Image (cartoon, rainbow, N blue to C red):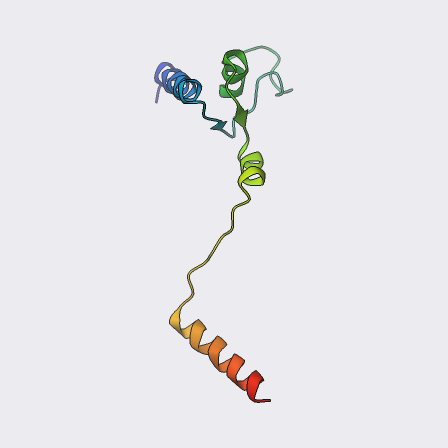
Length: 92
């Protein structure tokens, strides 16, 4: 993807977020926060969000906010093993 289309896509995401009151979640770091770059090479999503008043957070912050709970599928064999272990501990 070329830089023009990438910037257009970023601008579209930010415009929709502003219009609908959404928060953007991105791994991009603000050029202001990125100490490695000496001059502004390209505008990053967090910089545009700040300029336009759109809330922008990192994925780690999102996970802290929503406090997700993860459930993993359990196979039938695991269920039988757990049931047998529970039954033998109950019999003791």
